[in-house]
Image 1 (cartoon, rainbow, N blue to C red):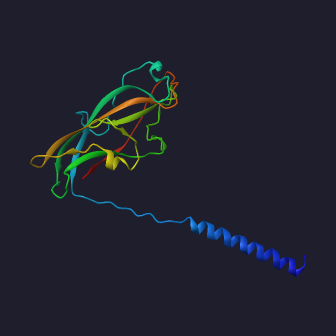
Image 2 (cartoon, helix red, strand yellow):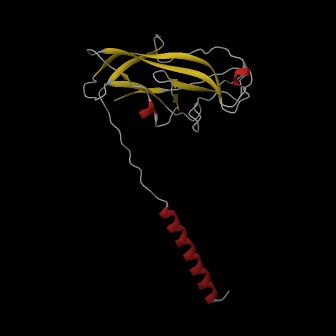
Image 3 (cartoon, rainbow, N blue to C red):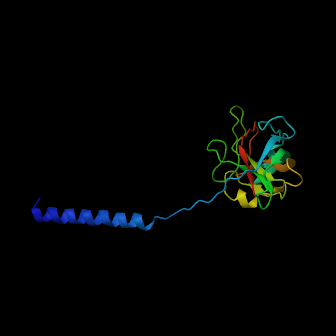
Length: 194
């Protein structure tokens, strides 16, 4: 290979590398984050229980109810019971809601539905969907829009005070064709205040 040919190949390689750099640079951006830490706090239990870890039992339903795409069945209420709520004086809304957190195993990151985590005799083509009991809207677990779409409940009265956050859970078959079997799901939450 002659010196001239080596120079041409080297120049072409440098030009190619520079064009890739410019392409990558053109697609860069900036993300700003905004949040707040507050003094507000509440103690919480699920469904009049003694702890935040409890089981909500859905009814057994026929797979025929979950045969069609996006079919739902077995809507079941549950409540987060708040007590000892205090230090809300610095908040403009003086209200609280649950923020249901993402989890790579338990939550479908594309839909915000809870995955069926039953390990034996598991039903297929079915997940669990959460609904806000104050406005019956779908909760997409892990999605940031929970901060604006959640039905916040007001904390009123002399502190410390109490509140009840109502929610629902139901079976959902996105594709339809659910099969018979066990359904289990898990979700973690934090309280959010405004």
